[in-house]
Each structure stands twice: as structure tokens, then as C-alpha cells.
Image (cartoon, rainbow, N blue to C red; front, side, top):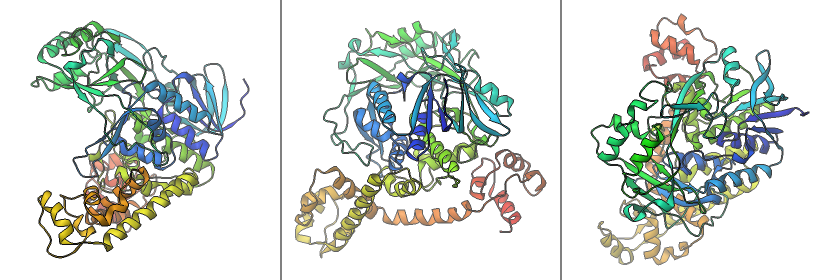
Length: 623
């Protein structure tokens, strides 16, 4: 085959690769997406779901910037829930179950309709380089394809090994071959390569589950969805279910521990702390009699179910025996056993915040190759790598989202400044400014930024502007209209909050925790104009209510972020010999030399760097 040179080659068509390719192509780059199997684009190889705690915020941020993950999730969802709704809006997190087959088909459909993307089914075995610059890729079929930049999104495929009990064999996922050559080449070029481990549970034939013994978990009556741009259309939902393990289940699983690759040392890679295997859970929490499991459908037209919380690398017969001792699964049959997979990753301290590698110009890493876990974490990295590879070719500075602008910024900053010693998963607790980084305002935070660099298109930008204007109109109206005692005191008594003796502005009443805007709209004639089933108008009303209710908290958070921003913007010269700064602790010198932070803000977040060390650096810079 003869290939014309490309601007960007994206290696791997998982969630990171798809977002990288679409972002770069939509910014005008000529892109080649290379993957081993075009039938498995954006495959949901593990849990068939998008979003969740903090992850839902990431999907909304991707959508706000012009990415496709939110649109695909909305078009293929079979259930939607807004998690943490009983808490404050900073904690609300959208999550959906997806039809995994439709998800893959929809992603491929969107990519094929995106101009500037070509596709090639092949295995990339190495990189083409000239000096310290990447110039393309080599493939298993003998191709040498030139490009100005390469984005590696290899997921779990680099030297992947699958473990089931005492069996182990090469594989990137079950029934898919591993990828060899890239890790070895990069190691020769001076990159550090390490191993991580992840796992997945048995897949169960739903026809053999007794759902009458399980707890049904229905979707929300009001489905919000992820995308800010598409009207939502889902008419029905499929239920998920909750099951529980027991001491009998645990005892059966323990019988297989001697065969476990985790416990006998065959697996060297570290597994995810927050999504452990079932054997790891019963070992670490030995005093616990039961663990909760989530039984999740994999699509509209399949009887395949995913048993969330039951990941395992134990022998298949042990998994099967233990499964049948769970209430409701006494007669269960499985489509395939659970397994663990061990794979190469590159410690992310080797990257700039743009996700370009420090050693090779034009080479970008995104997704599990950086030590993360989860579709959402991978997808946002892919989008940012695609954006920054494109900006570099326009001779523009990279787009670096800060920790007070996006969860995406928190994730990337954590990776670069703190590194990973286990698969990284995003949580709301990782974000210092989460009251600013809510799922409802991702468009307000990011759409304008993305529009300026040419990714968020006019339609998306115009819709954001319409929403912003409408929110301000609603806030102004609520700040001008008064409620009189005779028309509101009945509601106040119902909600067990003190009555008023004179007229009060609606915006002031809305500050009371016992009241919300929807109940006031139902009760007050002056708010009848806001009764609506229109999703856009509901979003605007919710946004106005949050801004009014939490205004003082938002202001304080903005003041704090402004102070931190001044620290963040203080640049550190690159290639400082920190060992020469004797006033720093030895640990700080070691870590600063290793990570080479770009700003004082980044330096302050490196584990082990103290405030005193930051003061030393500030003095060194003349501050």
C-alpha cells in the first residue's frame, strides 16, 4: 500500500483514539485512525456504562468542547440515572447504561461521517523517528506511514497477558491479540515502562437469572442525558438489579486463592484500588459478610448481563461455583468467565501537560497507556491529545485546562505532577474546586474556550450563548419579583420553614434549603410562565436556581481559585538543576528533577513538596 503523509496518526480506536481522531479532524487535520479491528471501534470491553461519580462530569465536559462521547451515550443509552441527587449540585453525576453494540456502531457512524479521517485496519509495531522527532508508524503488514504527529492510545494491548486461574496467554482483550514492538522500541529510546493490571467479571445469560430474588433498580423518570446540543429522545428504559454475595460465596472463592495469579505472584502489575476483584475484596475486607453486586444489561436485544463488582481472575470453575451460590443465580449459565489482564503503561511524568512526550517531539500518549482506568478518563485524554497535536501544527500554544476550569484539567495535572502507582480513577474528591466544576455548567466553563480554537462549532456555541442569556433573564426576574405573605406562607408552612410577614424577593426565598424552584413554580401564579416540559428551558431554570442558591459559595471558590491562579501562572524555567538548590529538602530535589514542573502551581502539587520548598523556589525566581 502507498499512503500519502498524514498530519496525525492515531493508533488505537478505543475511547481515547476515537475522541483524538474526531477532535483533530474537526480542527482541520488530515487524520489516519489505525486499529486492529474496525468492528470494535470504541468497544465497551468492560462495564457497558458511561458516566458515574465525577466521570459523568467528564463526559459533559467532553460534550461541551465538541467531543462525541456524550452524543453517542445519549443515542445508545438503555437507562439513565443522576447519581448523588440527595447531595449538593457539586456532587450530582449523570450515568447511563448503554447498548454496547449500538455504542460501537454509533461511534463508527460518527467517525465515518467526519471529514478528514481515513481508516486502516492493521497493527502498529513501531514508530518512525528522525532524531528526537516522530515521523510516522510501522505496521505489521509492512507499511511505513508518515505523519507530523502520532497519538498512541493502545489501551491494554501493549504486551497484554490474560490470566484465568493458572492459565495465561497473550491478549489485549479476550479473543483479541496483544500488540508487541512499541514498548520495546520506546524503552530503547529511554522511556520508562511499567505494568498494571485490570479485570472484568463473568458475563451471564439473563435467561437463567431469577430476577424475583434481586432488588430492581429503575432509571430516573426524568432523563437528562449528557449532550448539551441534541434533544433527548429515550422513551423507555431497562432496569438494573442489585444482588449480594454471602459467606458461602466467599468460602467458595477462597478455595481458589491458591490458584489465583494475584496471590501466587504471576501477576506483577498493580490493580485498581477502587474497582478491585472479588477475591481482592474478600481478602482485604475479611470481616465483611457480604458485598453488593450490580446486575446490568448489555443492550436492548441481548440477554447478556454484566455482574458489576464480581471481577475475577480465579479459575473458571471456581467463578462458576461461587456465582451459583449467589441468591438469584442458582441456575445461572455464563457466556464467558471473568479474567484479569496485565499490560504495559508509561508513567505519565514523562509527558508535558499537553500530553506530548518529553523525549520525542510529536508523540502523544492518551488513555490507559498513561495509567488511567475508565472509558471517560481515556476519552478526555484522547480529545486533549488530538487538540494539542492540532494546535502544535498551527504553531499555536497548547490548550492546558487548569484544575479550576475542568475535571479534565484535574485528571491531567494529577497524572503529570503526581504520577500513578495504580490505575487512576477520577472522583469528585480529587477536585479542590468541585463547586465550580459541576456537571450542569460544563458548557459555561468550556464551550467558549473550545470555540476559540476551532473545535466547538457555531451551532454548539450559539446554543450555549442562548442558554447563558436565558439564565440571566431568569435570575433577573427572580430578583425583581416579590412573594406576598398571603400567597407563599402556605407553602412555607408545608415545608416546615418560617413564614414571612412582609413581601420578600423570590431569589431571597430560594436561599432556604427547604425550598426549590420547581415547587415555587407549582405554587406561585407569578411563576406560571416557567411551567414547561422543554428540556432547554428546564436546564436554564436549574442553572439559574443553582447560581442563586450557591452564589456565596461560588464567589468564595472563585476568589480562592484566583489566588491559586497567580501561583499557577508563575513559570519555572525548564531543565533547572534542582540539586544545586541546597535549601530544598533532598526529597524535593529528587522529585523536582524527575518531574520538571512547568509552574510553581504544578510544583506545589507534587507529593512530598512542602510549602517551605515552594517558598524557596519563589525566592529563587525573585518573588
